[in-house]
Amino acid sequence: MTAAYVMTYNNLVTDVAQYLERTDTATLDKIPTFIGLTEQKLATMLKVLGVLTVQTSTLNQGSNVLDKPARWHKTVSMNITVAGRRRPVLLRAVEYLREYWPDPAEESVPKYYADYDYTHWLIAPTPDAAYNFEVIYYERIQPLDSSNQTNWFTIYAPQALLYGSLVEASMFLKNYEKAQAYDSQFNTIMQSLIVENKLRVADRQAIVADS
Image (cartoon, rainbow, N blue to C red; front, top):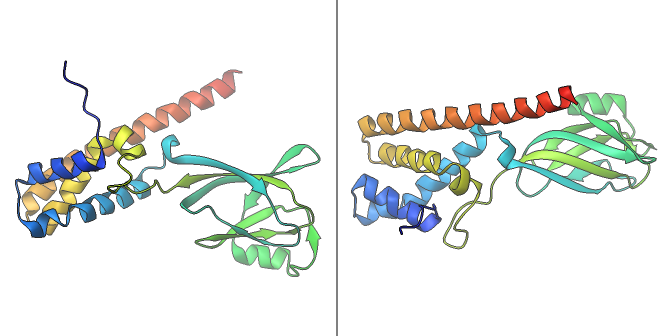
């Protein structure tokens, strides 16, 4: 009995080469680049439950700057626990936080956060205690390579990964007709993934409404 197909980095590289019908080194050496570019595209386009991550930790009292996780992509929500109860920390612009809490040396219960830069959040007021916090965010998936053979994309979106890589490869080869055909397949697959995720979210909201 033939085993079901399971995408890995190695067989994705092989599949892309076979679809392209190319054996020249100049093209084959670029296949990891095509895959990497497609992973970046998927990370930007797919805001789905599969790439949603929850992180818990504690704030540092007296520090209004908080490190983001290593593969942070976009924040969904943040909350802290005060006297045993969760309180939302709301997203605002950096300028709003600066005006609301101009003296970072003053401390109180945090109410707002902002994207300070790509690797840090700004918190206001400056925490007056080491509050437990929870942040929910979209994560950039660990990229594929020879030492990391599978990730969420290979398991749940293998067709998107394949056809996206073929689009990048066809553009590199200046075969715009094939690029257009592969892009059409890619977009159809992506729409299906996005609709499927919306249905999951709708189901979750319906459960909450009914309970």
